[in-house]
Structure formats: structure tokens, C-alpha cells
Image (cartoon, rainbow over all chains, first blue to last red; front, side, top):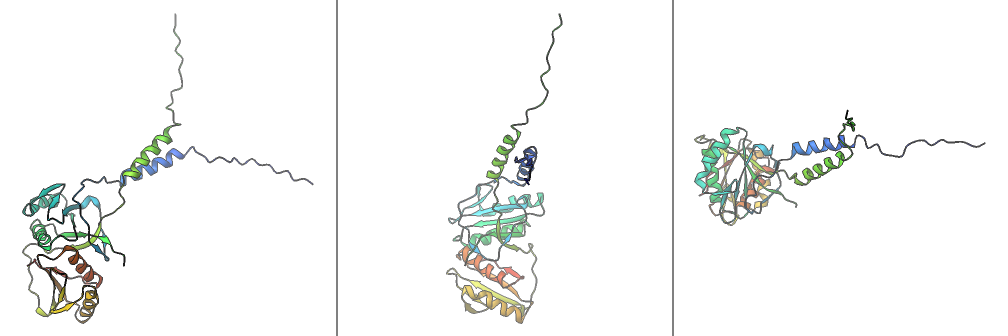
Length: 136
Length: 131
């Protein structure tokens, strides 16, 4: 007895819905992308273990502090006593603002302390010391 | 004389749509920066908000320009701060750690000190002005 097996399963992957799938992925990436706004200064971040993620990029303002003691906000070099004006207007525009300090690990604490004082004056109290994950 | 206009299918060609969408997708994949900012979180006290705190509830934590730590008067190695703070917090859970750094202290040392405090689950950290 011969078994007749009929093979009529199509071996093609259905491609009709492919554009839809790709569009969905595309829209996901479009929505989640936040283009890097500022290039900042060249800093080597310190390392830490107990780190936490910043809540959202949209509610974050960055302050760069280089090894040489330059302070930069939005790619403009500024003096430390001007931080309060910039941060005050930012803070007024966004009450959830977190300030991320991107300072070089060999920067001096004197300047960081100045930034603290300025931020307190600007009422921008949520702070984050940007750091890398340390592997021990 | 009547001119006959032949109507050629009114459809947008969709065969290349997948390619166009792919191209856009690849563009966004490439430009997306996944690296989320990470760091040590801290909340500064508001301006003019100074509280009187009992002396017994304050632990002064000093760090000098060489990265040496003085914890309530005793020198402690930076990597042992974590254990020492844990021990002291167990004794007194109302302890406030006041971190004071020298003006010339390296920021990296300061961050590792704060990290050590965070690892000891110290929630009450106060930042004193650099001297």
C-alpha cells in the first residue's frame, strides 16, 4: 500500500504584514529617541557602585565640569555665579528638574561646592552625580 | 472627436514601502542613544533651611585633599567607610552624616565616599560647604 501524501503547505513567509511590523518598530524608536542635545565637555566620570538611573532625559539638566575647572551648561562656558540664573529659569519651567553633574573625577571639590551653593539658590535641589558603574 | 483617456490604476505602489520604512527604522536605530544617564542621586537642602540637630546624632565625615577620610575623629580607609557607617547606624538610626570636603579634594574621591555612604544605606546625608 502506498501512502499518498499531499504536500501543499506553502513555504513562503507571509510578507504582506511586514511593512506594518516595521512601521510599528519605527514609530517606537521615533517616540523613544531623544537626540543628544549638547556635546558637553570632555570629562572622565568617576566610578560608583550604588548608582541609580535618572528618571527621564526630558527632566534633566546637565552641568559639565572639566578637569581644568571649566563649567559648561548647554555648551556655553559660564562662570559659577551665573549658574543660578540659568538654573532658576530651567527650574521654573520644569518643577521636576533633576540636575546631573558631569564632573571629571579629578575636578576639585571647591568648584563642586560652588555649584551646590548656586543650585540651592536656584532652588534646584534634585541632584545627580553622574558616574559610571564600577566593576570590582 | 472624443478623446478617450485611459485610467491607469490609481494605487500608490506599496512594494517599496517596506524598504523605505526599513531605511527610516535603521536611521532611528543608529541615532538612538540607549545609554541612560546614571549616577548617585542626592537632594540638597533648601536655601536657608537650617535645623538644629543634637550633637550626638551628627557624625562628621571629613575628607581631605589626599582622599583620606576622618570619620568622627578617627581615620578610616575609604573602602572601610561602608562597614563603619553600617555599624554606627545600627547603634543610632537617627544618625546624620555630615560630609565635609576640603576645597582641593578630588571629585572622584568625594563620589566614592558618597557611594560608600549609600552602600551602607545611609539616607540622611548632609553636605557641608567645602572649607
